[in-house]
Length: 485
Image (cartoon, rainbow, N blue to C red; front, side, top):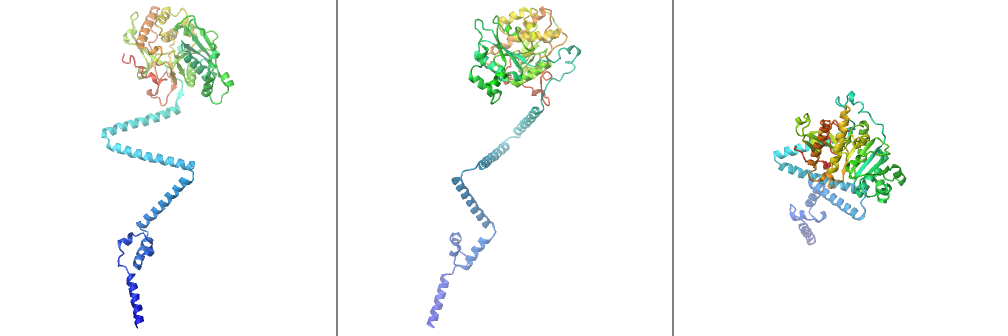
């Protein structure tokens, strides 16, 4: 009996030592020990239920474990294996997406802080920008070249002046004076970069430096740097033989005197009717140059150029009054654009017929005009425009100038004749003086009729808004002299 009683007491004591409270303590719930550490049957059942339940606690814990596992795997891959190109692209796209989301959130915050008036203003700006972008894309796709002639342009008397020329090439006449580096670059551009494939048949250099022997034309192409530049501009991989075959002939013209009138002297051995007059500081893009030649071929009796100007009589009543001094105002691109009218183009970059060189140097052209140009070293381009307008008007058909919208680089913006102070006043005075000489010889003011910039532009924009026409050079805009005259 004693033995049985002692065994019973031992069993009860061991059972009491292994018992736990009805509810597991919070310290046991937070404990990270394995399930077997809880000796109570109820505690073990509670832990197993939590582990097996599909609730949020189980899902969140499993996701955290999976994320930690993925981060560890990616970290090991980052340190142990090189990143592929595809993975780099994905990372770059991901960063861009994050930056876009951040910008979007910032814009939303700024938009919420704006006043209603500011919101309306920026909404209008955005709508204008989108409209301008759509118009630009349509213009790029559907723009064309040519003039749309109206009844004023096509009459029986203008049949002779609208005949097309059969010329397949043109001559470039470069006027220069004591600027050898700029002259070298100009010859390189027109004779080598553009050359024969863009219609340049010959290049003539008007050399007016007295007592200085003009250089040999081959010396302009002797530097290896120039040849390499020509190869890169005309196309990659071009051989010297191809450059030589594309290169136009260069001829030096020694003038008898230092005069701006010398640029319009007749040229011997000229192989084309078309002449492109240009200053040594002006570079017309080769494609724009060829488009100008196409415009001249369609209207060979007029001037086709890249710098439109407007010469307007200040008092309209003075047009019909002969013998009275006329106050004529010379306007540049800003006025031409906003008034959308012009009546002459400058010979610093323009096409004209070779016959006008003879007319300019002939005795029929008043000597007073040439003397005035020599005295003031200005206005030879205005004199040529007035000569062509007067010649065509007296022949019964006015040949209005044509504007070529293209890419033009003016390298003499800060050192040419037109950059001096009082240039606009000088040009206006020149127009008044030349008009007085014309009336003295029994001629009328030849630039009385100005034409629409849109109707006389060789590039036809789509859909055809007036503000789509642009200057060839962005630096045409700051020329605001006489803008309020």
